[in-house]
Image 1: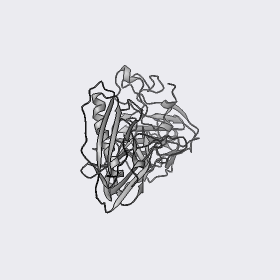
Image 2 (image 1 turned 120 degrees about the horizontal axis):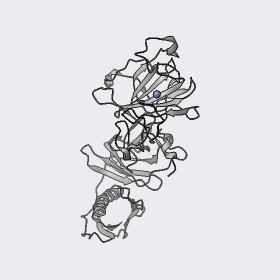
Image 3 (image 1 turned 135 degrees about the vertical axis):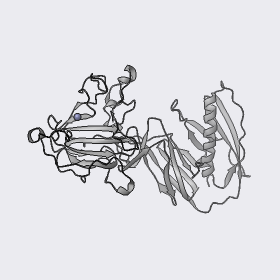
Image 4 (image 1 turned 120 degrees about the vertical axis):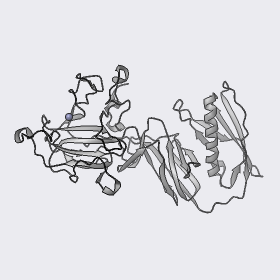
Length: 407
Ligand SMILES: [Zn+2]
């Protein structure tokens, strides 16, 4: 094992206050007696940093420990650090042992900012450096950990083959992660991982989890937002009045027969088909078909997305509204970006061809749930409260018009 190669590890605090890397370095060469000293240097020695130092110091020991198989650490030699001291130095001694590990596995890969939630690093999507990647055992003990390097890459080697939980700690703006367009999960959770051989696992980190309900190049005009004001007044997420009273979704004006796609992976809990266009002309029984042909997708994260006024002939299997279901019901699944329907002009509330797109919360009891505006509310945070607004955006970066806002 080449110890020299493992002598530099970058340690970055996880509280986003600083992006400056802190360097952990081995200060002395491995001697003939196979005894080495690790020196940890950490800046800004306030009490919080001191705690982080100890944490990352311990983490770095685990990193080095996994890299330096065949060695084990002696006890930490620590010193108390006054809050005003700006640098902390700790030393540690390595002792060579004869430890042998029978069956080893590893996991490596890259973390990147996934602008479109497809689990693939596309052109222009930056890597995520300095994120903590941990392997934990089934009782939550950290077995190995590493920080992604400046290329966003991590590697956890020389762990025993078996089942682990992978845990990511990155900037708090990253709330979801995915490995493909068919799934996503909260970054805050653990990810089950079976390691029996060298495994590659790239992870796309996302802010929101929704992409637009149609593909790039679609001819549309975003006309009406969610009305965040629960009273008879009207207020959109910008504080403007691009809405009408009681509107619970976003209207995209578009010609008929445009491809409508799933905004996130999920389960089809309703697919209402068979209504013709312009029911105002053809129907007088208006009570039950306001939305016309409609699809609802359960994203299994407390939200459902609704697509209304669709053209007849859905691309998913028809299904009556099913708010309560279990895995054994085998409801149809869709991937992010999957073609689910064509845009239309059905339902009594359509004022011309458009897509009504809506996100609802729901409870685990199968209730319908209240609407939720996908946009980050830039008005009510300082002007009171709206039951429909978010202080975070539900959109992935590629689809978030708030990113285009100057400043
Ligand atoms: Zn609408």
